[in-house]
Amino acid sequence: QTILAIESSCDDTAAAVVRGVPGAPKAQVSSSIVFGQTELHAAFGGVVPEIAARAHAEKVDLAVAQALDAAQTDLDGIDAIAVTSGPGLIGGVISGVMCAKGLAAATGKPIFGVNHLAGHALTPRLTDGVAYPYLMLLVSGGHCQFLLVEGPTRFRRLGGTIDDAPGEAFDKVARLLGLPQPGGPSVENAAASGDPRRFALPRPLLDRPDCNMSFSGLKTAVLRARDTLIADQGGLYRQDIADLSAGFQDAVADVLAKKSARACEEYLSLAPDTPVLCVAGGVAANQSIRARLEDQSASLGIAFVAPPLALCTDNAAMIGGAALEQMSMRPADGLTLAARPRWPLDDTAPAMLGSGR
Ligand code: ATP
Ligand code: FE
Image 1 (cartoon, rainbow, N blue to C red):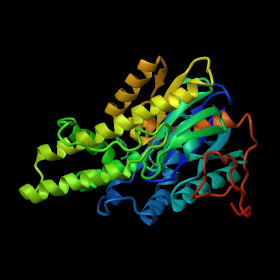
Image 2: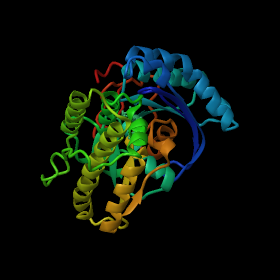
Image 3: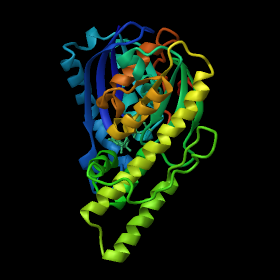
């Protein structure tokens, strides 16, 4: 089957062509086009939903055309259309869903609404063909949770953040330190020349025996340390920014790694044949976080899988991959498919127009 996939739930307009056998591990990513919006939002210090929605509406057709071109195919060569139908910024999700419905109506091809988080969480199936059940740390701009992935539509949440997501914290810390958005890559860059031990930053909830995490106190601690430096010396030196970035990144990595060990205990009690810890989402693009998680898994004797960077941050290939996984076990959605701003992973049924969800 050849799937054309569309993703527009945040600030990336993406389209991809993915080829594979429904339900089988691993698929071929024939093309994956991503148009970012960083410059559009740069002046505002964060993603502006109205601007994002407009940009998606303008760019989505072009993304689809380029994805088909790059995969050396056209609409006739496509078997089904997959689209992120939530959760996310609703204006953006609607842009993608409308485009997908237009293509489905014009071609008569089936349409599959895919949960954006399922796309992230199923990425290791697409890239590495990891067997179910696997443990997934989904760590992104808006989410942070440990999931037991039991099947293409079966996700059990073991715990997660009780306040901010780490990606959000990276973005806020970048703003505090005067670094450009998105904060993840710029904080990672600055941290490369920093000393993670100069500032003692908190690691909340590590003493608790569950899989829950908290990152908002960490961000506040960075703010306090910054303000103390500014009061003492009238501003921040380059080394201060590097050290604060390194300290922050180290604290996030520490919490994620130690809580992963906790989640692994729960996962291993289910006696999986080949235990695997996977990571996905934008923050999984961070090299030092990946390295810490890899060390942690190695010390527990568990395999570790982290998708290539371009498949960690938002992309449409993961949506095509998720559709391929799901299409053998559920019917297509049809033109009544609705966009959902909220859509928890344990509620896997896509909404229909008029269903009130
Ligand atoms: P969600 O998937 O939760 O709906 P989203 O789609 O906006 O949110 P992603 O695109 O998966 O999130 O991830 C974006 C986030 O990842 C941003 O907060 C960004 O700062 C962060 N991020 C990207 N690269 C890195 C990196 N190298 N290190 C740390 N964080 C990163
Ligand atoms: Fe995402």
